[in-house]
Length: 476
Image (cartoon, rainbow, N blue to C red; front, side, top):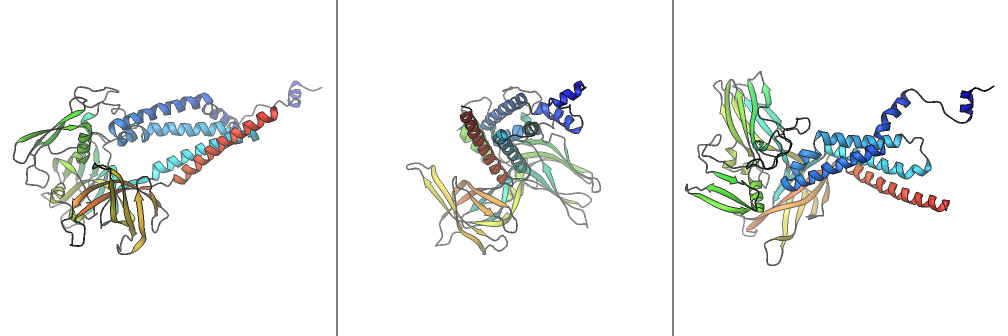
């Protein structure tokens, strides 16, 4: 006589599975739920909408720092990938009618992996070149560091590159409150006071570098995103006094007030529109206040951002006023100290020479309707050696450059231009004016995965619709 258990087995009812696979299935089940996926997608959509708003108000650096590059946003994207993977594995063994579903979810996973690879390894920088000149060094926007050089008496020079993450705003605008719009006369504040693990930046009092053997410490005290000298305090290493120029924006209005003390000592006042003020502030350098201690001697000072490279990429052409922003001192023990606060740079394995910049204006205006650049790819060491001639970079039409000696592919975009400038060193046969063209060079190792993921998503959706129509037709 058969028992109840044998009857259930004969009827096709399976025994409950225990072990590793059972626990794995129980772990993935909540993440593979459709309700979990929908809720997660809604949360991501809300934060990305807020990021768009923040980007419109404060720029792309702010939206990237607040949302897209924040650890909590990366965690949410990781949960999305886990949800897609769980919903796929929980349906194993797969059936033929699930082919479109599987291809679509595989495409989403490939797309997320490509985004992660790009986030970790991609590089983007600005390359500025004057007509007739070449350059191979690009500047990374929004990324800064300190260059510290110590030369003790009778010893070799110690060189240290010290990373610095100040965030997208001046530190005086940060608050500990969650949301306090328009507090007093300041700019709107956001949740900048949250823990570092969520919104990372350096803070006042952070110790950036310490070498106990050489008795050297570098502490950061304050940061100004964009500004000019606001007092007659002398710049580091300079005996000259500076005029003051400050910006006032007490209320959110279409007009801004801006005061400046001219060389003659008479104060002047100019009213600018919001767009003009943004352009003015964009041309101002950032400042950082530090405390540097060497051999027991401590100094506090403001240090201006040092721009290494002029449009032709030659450091020897840096104006004297910019060179004076370097801090130099010599301690009582004979240690020579040099500190520079500068943007990060990317030294490319190739060089570009700008042959000619083409600018076409709208009729009756000074606004550029179309502009492009004729460039030549040359060897980095031997600028007379041409690697690829007659390259044209136009608006919305980038070109790809294969970096010599590596497998990296840099995409070159026409970004902006400056000028025309008066060519004081022009020969009789040369143009009396020249332009400076700025390109964006971008290296994206995950671009192939991004394209492949999008292709799989489109293919999977097409399969789902075609198979659904096929089954409905067969049933009818």
